[in-house]
Image (cartoon, rainbow, N blue to C red; front, side, top):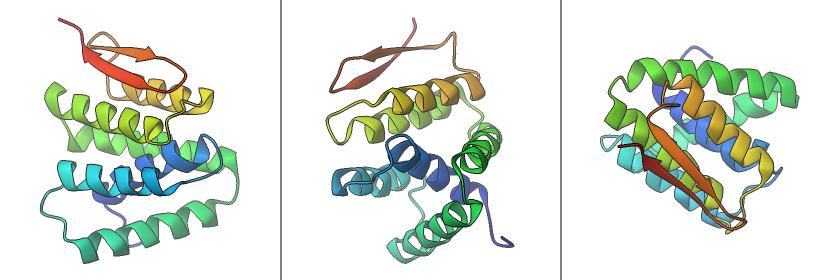
Length: 143
């Protein structure tokens, strides 16, 4: 996709945690994705977000299978590592992924694995602690 940007990578990561983990996206997860993009990318308009989301979903569908989609998740995380270079910003990315994972009040094992992969890919392993219950996932900074 010629217009793919790091902003697309952020939306793609959110879509993956929302859909790829458990095979469905409910309305609470959609709203969480939209809200978290607004937090991370405050200058993105609603129209720009809608266009980006459509392009990301098209790419997600075009990738065709879980393996290709998971590979792109890793590629997108690497791009986000470059886009969000401070620990504070990377912490926000991880927190937002956890927020999306818990938006439907259930933490699927695959969602947990994807958030853990993000922690590792963003070099936050020794900086954050993930606390999971059946219905929630918290991300705390390690002091």
